[in-house]
Image (cartoon, rainbow, N blue to C red; front, side, top):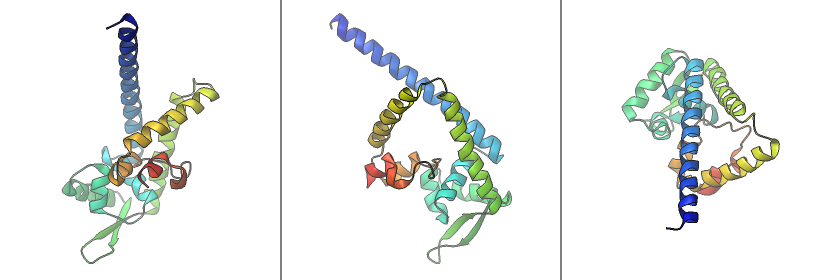
Length: 177
């Protein structure tokens, strides 16, 4: 291997390591903010944000989006209902249950999405506007690459702010359309 190739490989490895550390740090901060706002476990913020964007999701759909078992989703919905954040209604067919946010649940979901946005805004505050624009373009390309099917798209966007990134402009949605 030439010195130039070894240098590029080392730089690429370092960049990957730094990106991994950034992802971990942002995940930890956003997860902490979400659980502080909801007062519930780690899956609750994503469930509330998902239901804000997609009212009436079934428990089965929530389990897929959140990456938890059906029984785990049932227990989560039980906790959210017990906290007055969601209510169950009849679903599309006789066997399913549709989960809807209560007004209190909607308020908490909006706070979760807002805290996520503020966490990210704080993390990027040191970048110049041009750097943020370049980062946005690169992130769109990476997200599109990670969006392999509807399931992956739903998981990726489970905490997204659909007001800021509507589905017709979302790189994840465009990738799976």
